[in-house]
Image 1 (cartoon, helix red, strand yellow):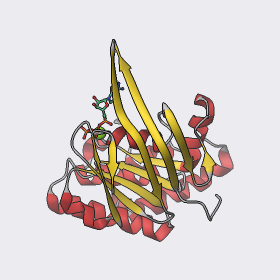
Image 2 (cartoon, helix red, strand yellow):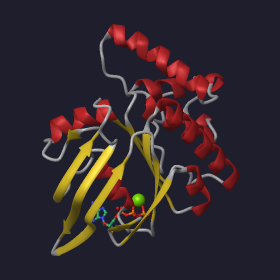
Image 3 (tube, helix red, strand yellow):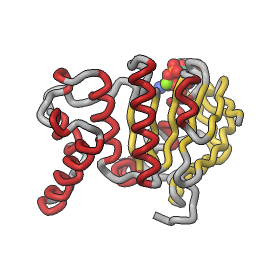
Length: 227
Ligand SMILES: Nc1ncnc2c1ncn2[C@@H]1O[C@H](COP(=O)(O)OP(=O)(O)OP(=O)(O)O)[C@@H](O)[C@H]1O
Ligand SMILES: [Mg+2]
């Protein structure tokens, strides 16, 4: 990682989706810089482009126009294969729907991130166990997602996003399925985990109550960003 570069630099990014005869401008000239160690809240109404922005920042989607640089690495022109590798090595995602693999237990859900050989595998197991402990889940490591509470599942998803030691993590409405109390606890945990690692994050939320866990709030309406 190039230490002097911002965690994310999006420059005049435009994203247009085409469905049948219609074009939807999901992002219009979006420019956003996230500093190292910074947690940015992204707030806006449904359909305003939040998930699209996260997907582009994390190399799931490519922009129609503009440039995307993550930790000094310009990913704009990457093909599918390089994007896959970039995602695996550099970024983490926590989705609203959590997306745990239902037939793998908590520990195995962390370990699927790791796709290396045997020696690294041992190290991955150590890292998974350390993360589970930090997240207060050591005694639930063998539970399947269906045997966990909503907040515990969300914590497993956070652990999984941190497995590859990313420099930038996108949280897309990480607390929307949790009540206020649990939502605050999960945000507190996210903040602690990010700050102790010097990892940057974008946190998408509809909820003004959790933006105060972030360093800065950026608004988005109809694909247009406003500080
Ligand atoms: N794959 C797609 N194909 C076509 N249009 C899409 C696609 N994904 C999103 N859109 C459209 O792009 C716009 C932005 O969608 P996006 O999912 O980024 O919004 P969002 O802010 O995350 O909304 P929500 O808060 O409901 O999750 C919406 O108008 C949506 O209908
Ligand atoms: Mg969304």
